[in-house]
Length: 413
Ligand SMILES: *Cc1c(COP(=O)(O)O)cnc(C)c1O
Image (cartoon, rainbow, N blue to C red; front, side, top):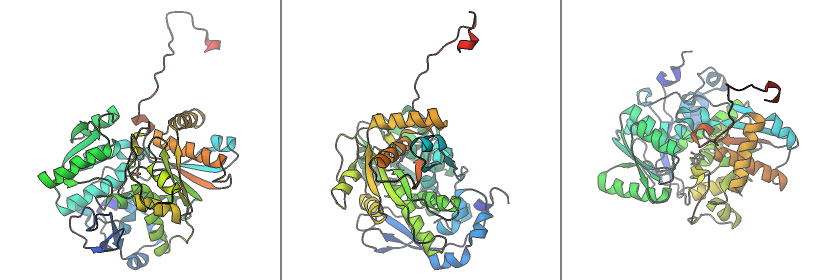
């Protein structure tokens, strides 16, 4: 098969409608939507009985290895609306050395840093921008901690759509640069991501921008859902015992939870579900607090701070969806301190040669913490999400030098 067959193939569309995630109220497909009329995220619904008849595991296996192989479960109706930069399937990497040290559990790292723009935000934004193209949207705006803005900039520019992006003042330099270089107009704002979100909301009202904020746009979840589809397929249509997911706005966790339900409906997996474990940084852990207090919603976390900037999200519109998925799956929410994140990052790089991003390292730190306190066991097969390339973050300076003009003590090097 030619590699772009997934991009050009005829796609019978199975989207039936959109549904308010809180009230279930029906919203029509093929129209521009943000939140539901109740002010909550919208979920895309499909004719899954139709998909069940149309798609077999064998047919899927023969398709090129990218996210578009799952087209029957994706919202884009016309091939010509696809805006692709090459969304390859990401590998699952085993980490036998650290696993052995911890007692022999099966630790799998899904390495999302291989996607365009170096993070899994590409999965969500490729879908949001393709749908924006299909719906004729001309100007997209977004608040971002960095990676989402970079992915939006790349895809929107590729599609010829204008973008305006707002990020907190201390957003990593590389993110601000890549956003600008990929054709967006980017501003640093003296505030956090939710403060940036307010500016986007006002710009939507006053200048007609399309608000591409996390979960205020229905299709990013569909893109992120492919992590769950891909994971199940890669594990031979099995799900792992637990998934450790670095949770900010929660799109990925919510999306994977939706993916497993859809896969069961189309007969590809059984009713086993992984325990969904929401990992947050101790300096910004609204989901952990709400989980522990048994609440359905998570109030804003004040003075949020962590080196894992991708999960520095003080308040999430999809809070109830994250908490539901975590609870229904028998999982939990867990916070890890920044020093534990840093040492997890160092350990995985030094011992496995695997450079994680801080958010990915947070999942490894959380796994170790959960093993130690007995919330997961050594016999559990766990998947850790490394959501971005470690190369997108500041790396430690190394000062070891060699003077080639002096005698070299080779045995001592
Ligand atoms: C956005 C992001 C997250 C959080 O993902 P959500 O699905 O929005 O919770 C985690 N890590 C990195 C690197 C990110 O860019």
